[in-house]
Picture (cartoon, rainbow, N blue to C red):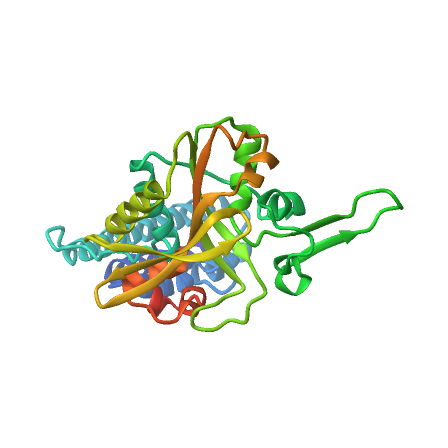
Length: 341
């Protein structure tokens, strides 16, 4: 190929390339022009470069210099076209954005209704002077039964009524060690009294486990709040006053509380606690004066101190407040239900 012919073809390609790049209306069409001109395998500039081999050796330096100049000019035109289109896209996006319009509120999660209830109960009892205590959910028999005056022959210790995790019978003369998921948060009261001299004023809240068949009012895992107050000259009147103030604070209006005689191994006397709210009486839990045997188990002198204890179901309190008739709804993880709280 003669040098003149090569240069004419090179100038024509440069002019048509510049014109095509400047005429590109969007990023896709620009990319198509780039591939046609600058493609590494089939681009028109690459095809013309192969023509350098047919030029005389004496004329190759001139041809090579002109080719490099043309290539740089085309690449510069491509870079300018790309910058132009990128800026146009950015301007178009900005033109469609109105900073004065209200934003879209993101969907945020929230605490489970049982957790919300627990936090509120903690706050109410804190205002009544009770501190919050916690303990393990896996317990030994002493804390779950023995120190609470529940004898080994008591039906509450039956394996069918508890989730025993391990039973190890050791050699003759050694104690039998049994572990279970706690069936009541009263275990925390024993742990606190083991380590704290009177006076004591605590509430414990958490999960407890019993092998109940799940229905509208029962579940094998549920939450309890238990309170304990130990001091001198504590009476049943103090217990009733605390429960009435608590119920009124939680439900937001005056609530009447009544006691019905009952039996619990760890309290004497023992009562069932009923609450009258709106249209009727509702059983809320059990309570009573701490049994002297419990005080002796933790090293307290029952001749010097007295105290009361109570236990209430958190699910029952939450369900009563929100008009829920089936506690299984709390544990189905149905967001349509949970969004209401």
